[in-house]
Length: 193
Image 1 (tube, rainbow, N blue to C red):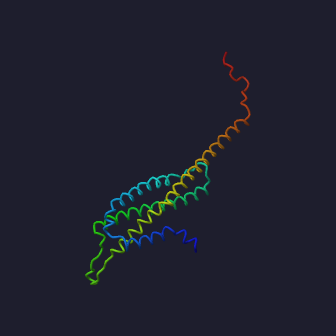
Image 2: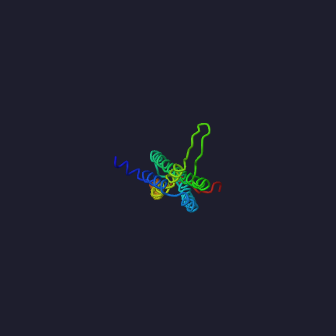
Image 3: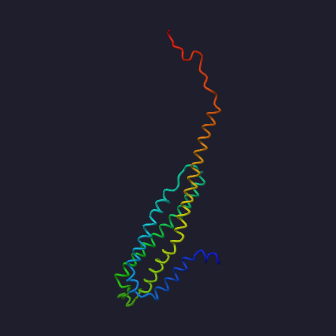
């Protein structure tokens, strides 16, 4: 149970941050820093995109078995899902910051057919804070993911080089074991003279 809680540290921390910010951070403060926050999430999104492209093109067939290729494809797919979700957190957070600033963080009104007043301002702030803080906290596994991709790329490159060297050695060994070419009798003799 403790291991699962530790695995979800970023999710639990984001929930705590969202609750605290929703109740204690005034809308005016968010409006003052929204431009900087939008810039931050935009930069983070710009960093994620090359990682996604690198992940998509990482798998090469040289030097790996079909079983390895399938296992790597599955792992890279999970990695790509992580990148896409992180990118979505950034985009949604930026959208919420823009809408929040435009509405002064007040999402309230009345549903006329139900005669019910609603005020989702607190919930709106909490969701924005949750997604934004989760996007920031997931930057830590993002960096670890990029480093693991670099290590995987090195391993795949090394395997490809080893496979190429094995193939070259096999060709050299076959050439060394081959009987020398024996020319037939009369080879090179000019015919008709």
